[in-house]
Image (cartoon, rainbow over all chains, first blue to last red; front, side):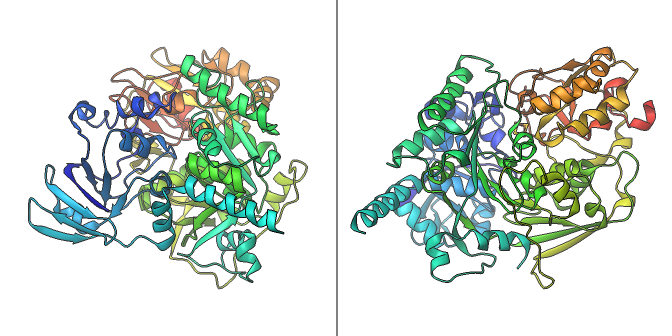
Length: 172
Length: 425
Ligand code: SF4
């Protein structure tokens, strides 16, 4: 999987209230959530962002609440991926579960600037900075998480598991 | 193994346990059985939608899935009402035994331990980040996403990366009015909001061993605010006292082995931990309360899953009794559960708050997440006993939240600025 796009940059500790403020959580409609993406950090962000863009941020991206609305809003806003120095853990697992590609790379987060054009080779964990002519590596993704991504997220994985159990039950 | 590893090992999925696996170690990815799964009116709607996609014919266990509408409930607007309705209808359809309707509900992390629905030794996942609260009972509990909950509702299992553990040792003597809230704020101030990222936070030491359960719950509640996967306290006599008579299931006490591994050990001399306040906009931005006396406030909130228990109500009432809320301040007191509410009425605490001209509300998360029942306007400032002070957390993006214990919050309500209890009593 190759992901190519323009970069929006944010700092450390971008929390889930910044990604999607709690006041909009009386709905879980992705389109509506996407309309308020990052608006407390940058009022115009929902209008400026275009499909295929990529977020690059510092440490602890997605800290705070467990709301899956955060990665959902990012995905629904058309953002393809997030690169950060590190992710908050619930955000990390939510992203894999719903199929939002995320990459941990200290080097990339430090060297990429806002507006850069980048290309991520998700399978190899290589991030190319087209604007700057540089290349960085992302932390490898554990095999189980790769499996999650390859089947299309946790629900698909669970579906397959339930089916398998059902077949085993019928056999015995 | 340490307590976190032991609980995870004891819950390894049948497939893994069947292959003879009895131990786990940090960094491993495992599948484990869950004792309880929970979600609220914000997170359950997504879980319900996703659950239906799994093709599961039924939930794994009707009596181990808790749905608690507490964030925007009592339903604050039409959209919130629609979300709560989804929980209600799903609970009816699948015959869930742990659905808590308005009138029976409370803030989830106060309600479930109080009702003995979570017990020591449990493995709990919840679609709410403060699910880590139950570590106070010696359970492994952690916040996950709605999709995780959907999968767990279908299979009774969840995937985990076994966390590394950090040990926090508290010794010495607690200063007057200093409680679990101050200890945890101080700790987060020390290690930062990602100081325990992906890790288990095990709280220990002579101070913890004599710390009452409500303060333990407050500490474990905020483990997530340091990035922690779970907070945990090895169960003891205080745990036994709490669990006895309320636990609805049999429970197990797990301990940490002498030679258990820890990624890091931190020690704190409690005699040098002051009444602590987190300043905007991160819980780690801590200062001694006494240094903030020039910060004027517009609103005070006492409540939430962090400090909405009866002991917290008593503490605030003790400070405010016979006094009045400053004319420039709105004080909102929210008991976390119906039981706490009723007890506060019976003990005369409700009367103390109302006489002091504070609002005394039915249980809800409400203002904690800027939902309803006390949302801040542009430029307004609050001090709250809640757990998060991110930008816009309690309302307008240009409002501010300071975090404290209930006694400091109550003293601040009287003074109209951040104050310590000693200043008013
Ligand atoms: S009281 Fe606040 S922190 Fe606790 S569950 Fe409710 S919204 Fe979350």
